[in-house]
Image 1 (tube, rainbow, N blue to C red):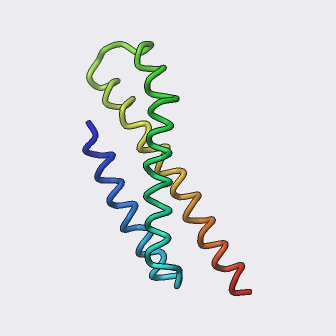
Image 2 (image 1 turned 60 degrees about the vertical axis):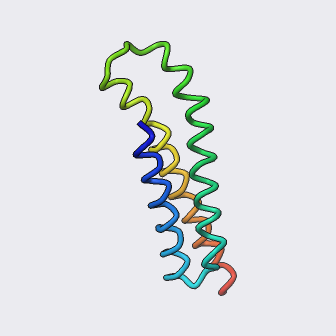
Length: 95
């Protein structure tokens, strides 16, 4: 079940590295910020969303799979916002 979480964690690391490389940002700082943001959001959404909802939904394999992948979607959404903030801060420094 955690295969997609790990895969998207690695892809987030690559995504932030490539963004830093393309925009002239720090090549080490941005991927670390992205990875920390991803895993922190994943853990928080798992504890705040999945655990409370796990008892409410029926024990069906499709529903359980979708519920366990919800933290990945939340984490990717937050990483998109973090990436946008990093790019905006880099643009603000250039002006």
